[in-house]
Image (cartoon, rainbow, N blue to C red; front, side, top):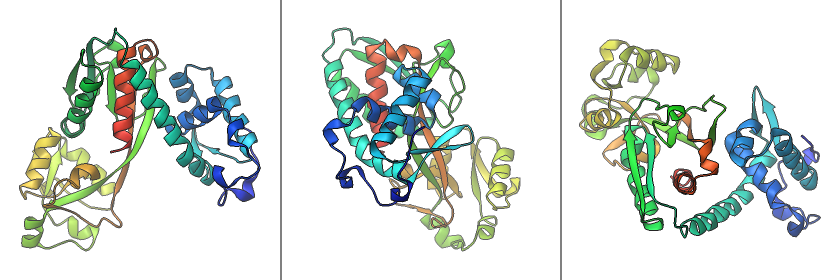
Length: 313
């Protein structure tokens, strides 16, 4: 991609570049940059925008040349924003959200926004996020019907088991459109009454002496936590459930430590994050749909409203 102005990366924003006329910035180039930043991949962004990859690359390069900044750098098979890219993105995303809102408002006036749209997501996200989003969808398009498939298994969009999926991994299938809409954080929580009884851990080794609640396969959790320098054994897990909501409720009941998305944990004042300054887990939230997204107004409407809700979560 084109670039330049590397010495200015840490200090320059669009609004501070007095030599650039904002009216001469091409919205198509700004949108290409924004979607590429969110998808972290040229090929994925090209699928979202319905462009060829070379065309998308040229649009991003044109914006870099216009701004005199390097916006992306390659990291392995993907792309990462430079400091300048992150700064520019903070200005471009509100424009993108405004465009989404206008598109949603226009789409809602269409007479063909009827029938079912099926969304699949984890049980926790289905319970904590989707009811509010579906309520907004119903107000925007009253004739739409929405089904939620609450499962921790990944439904196969290629077999049309769902129209839209919320996942924590980027899909590999070329016929799917994916957008990373949020980089979420999780912490390890325990009920305050449990901590009052057994004491609060000061180190990760202290956490290995406490009771834990397992989400699903205990051996996998042991392996994962060991990788985080918390040397658990199967004996640490005194309770377990494959259902994330059930496991969380057991943690809230004081039965041990359990991981949770920070947005859910923050809504439970009786739960306390353990070692929050040094122990957190980051995970992406991907919104995925079939290519029909580009031709189905109802799927596009729900997809866009989900993207806005997850990004603001």
